[in-house]
Amino acid sequence: MVPEWTIEEGFAEEDELWRADHREEWAEHDVRTRAFLDEVFAREGGSDVVSVTAHSGTIASFLRVTGHRTFPLPTGGMMPIFVKATRTT
Image (cartoon, rainbow, N blue to C red; front, side):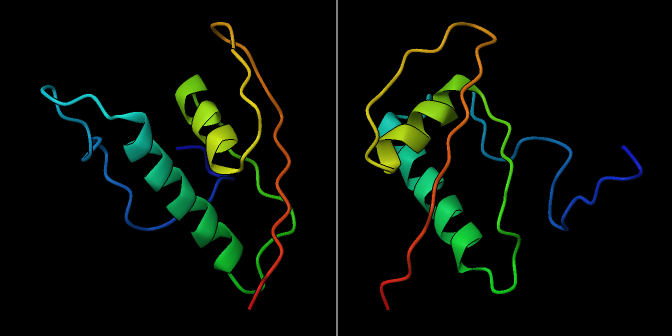
């Protein structure tokens, strides 16, 4: 690992969600993406800026979950996405 990076506890070396006989549907991916965003924005005292590096499927899920229009990404393409959360409670 890179010594200056902090990796949170609980990460496994092997992908525990991958299954050879199941391809995740968009709706399933969106549920995980929404849960991730909820967790990030629920943290008290967290950073104002969070960087996420992801593949095009997750980028597309971010766009769907946030209600943004979709954009096709070429292989190796990049897209900055800025999300601002507002507490409603």
